[in-house]
Image 1 (cartoon, helix red, strand yellow):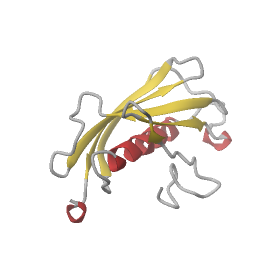
Image 2: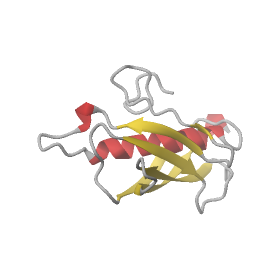
Image 3: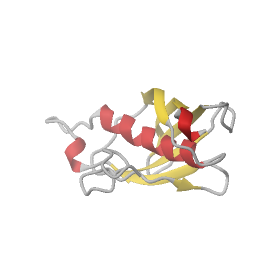
Image 4: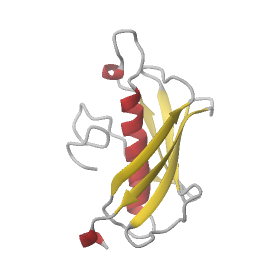
Length: 135
């Protein structure tokens, strides 16, 4: 994790999204929507969802096919069902329809967010680039 990252940081106020490997090659973690992520009407800020799924995919990208530092250059998130404050979800990341390996300094990832009954509530695609010094 990046110690002061909003999403994967180690600080108590971070969302502490720390994905780990599954036996099938995907990476996943549970994630509880923090109480502070809601607006005055009780709706969860979608930016919080974007940050959580981005970091979940980041753990996958940076730790599979050789460990590399990388950064997101493009991400798209589709929210299918509004998130519930305080609810716990599963964040899952994998290659999706991208190659399951680095293409030079480039790599793609897909992700999904599932609720406690296994319903997909959001999905995402992202594109990553490794700094020139990490290849």
